[in-house]
Image 1 (tube, helix red, strand yellow):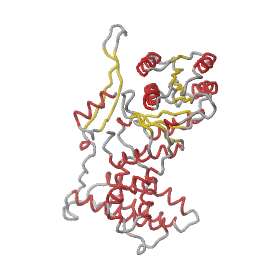
Image 2: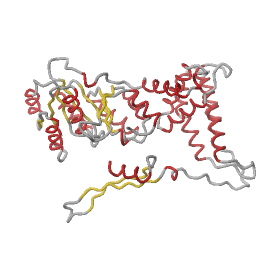
Image 3: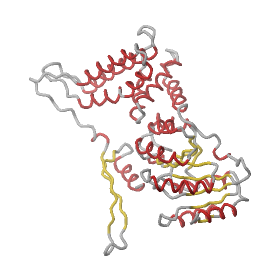
Image 4: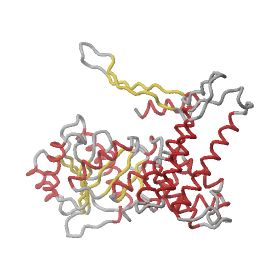
Length: 420
């Protein structure tokens, strides 16, 4: 998949849109010696958005976007006057931008005979100006200020707001960030794009809980600092274990031991064994819980012990509960949930919800180099409520791993240019 995505980016550009993926098997004889092949169907970004269909001249047109704006504005302003004002306004604001922008995409163009033709860019600008006015009035209702007292939404602020939506930030998070920035900066400061961007980075970063000094942690009870990595299949747990081990061994000079519980996946044991030999650390396989206790005792003289577990589907509750029994035996100081940045918001939240049953207290985000949008990662880490510990940005061991910094994700959201 990595090679296929890189090929798409190389042939169609970094803004290419992947339409379909599938894995097939080819070659071989009588089902033996086949090889896995990943197929992607992709296109350039400019081919995704359909052109607006012309409307017959005789048919009068009233765009649905005007109805959406009127209905939303009416309900937003009414909610500001009710006892449920704050929660109602937050809930309604969440759907504001998506409904409006979807309406803009779906609405037909005005009939040519009814009004003089305008360049498409001018039409879009007019619509954006109307949305900007709507955002201003909603913020005024939320802040209980009058139109005369509240400053207008500056061009720079509004452009950043649209960028957040384009990066799949939720409407609630985008409005909260926008609200905080406009309420803390003066009118003159809001005209300074760099200052506004810096303030927005700080605001987004404040939404992300982070484990301070992930590589500097020490054991609180005399045992080796024991860390277990859990998560769904295919998120890169084994490679991440090797990267963390290399960081402790090579950067911190600590003694490290590796234990794998993953005896299900083909070649998983050999993969971790190769990494252990390259890094120069001991590695053991635990095939039973009694064997796990013995291995932990053998490694009791080390500084750090990392436990690699078998991937579990978030839909397989029985396997997740089985994993919990292994963790009860190992008694790790930290349980890191490994999530792939390439997954959707709903999948990530489902995985976090199911694995929270086994006592996760850290989150690792992998494959940032393959992620298309970063905005939803800010929201997901905020909603999960567990401390972000590590970020991985590629396949290389011992490189391509970094301790989590909230500003790092926030900057990725605004730069939207990929991981460097």
